[in-house]
Image (cartoon, rainbow, N blue to C red; front, side, top):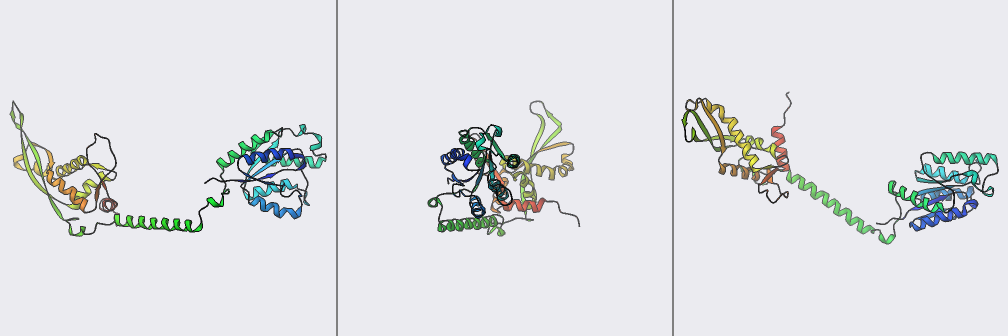
Length: 351
């Protein structure tokens, strides 16, 4: 939505009429709203409250300093400096356009009173500190300096600004948007709650400490029997091991914190079978001094494990798009699965 910014132009008046005209022209070309002493040419105490009200409504403050300090109030401070101090107090972003060489200004546009000259120089020094300051010499330079200074301020210190009333949504429209946002928030909360709980009906499925028999195969390589054509004698054996569903899930879950391919899951389950059975098999008499390896889960049991964990709401297929050559299937934890994994694996504190 396009904004227009109101800019307060502060300066002495009679000596800077031409300069102010250049500045106002630049502001209007930028679709800004100029405000200044053209609205209140008489600077006096009665006007001061009105001046402050106008400054309060502005987005930016532009100060032009020439060769005069300007008319002063009862406290001896010029109205231009009072406007500046008030803009600082209100936190407006200030752009200062200060004459480059005060000594080169025609005598008709300078202060004759030494005290006023001193106040002008002091005001210039104050305005230079911590402000966006640009220096000018000829009135026509002010147009370009105003555009560049204000563009910088708008870009780096965006203000509230104004928009046309017919472009602003009415109260009913805003109210409807707020209702929809609240409804979306409620739905997201419900979805998070649902996804963090076990699926309805899953309590009837085997899970937790319930056991599942995993069929697997392994190979035995006999180093004492060597065939010149096929090498050492290798036999394939089949066996069965029982694991709880918690144990199975704890084995594969860490792989799916981000995602895991089916090959990765199968490899991890094969490692579980090796770690669980290798040492026991090695102690059996018929396998003494023989190499036991090649543990491989039964393909049907591997499929059953995937289906069971999916049915329990612990894992789901990852739908992230992939390259044409990647034909593998990837799995990831559900929010509920992540919670169950954390509960099973996280290290508990010793009491």
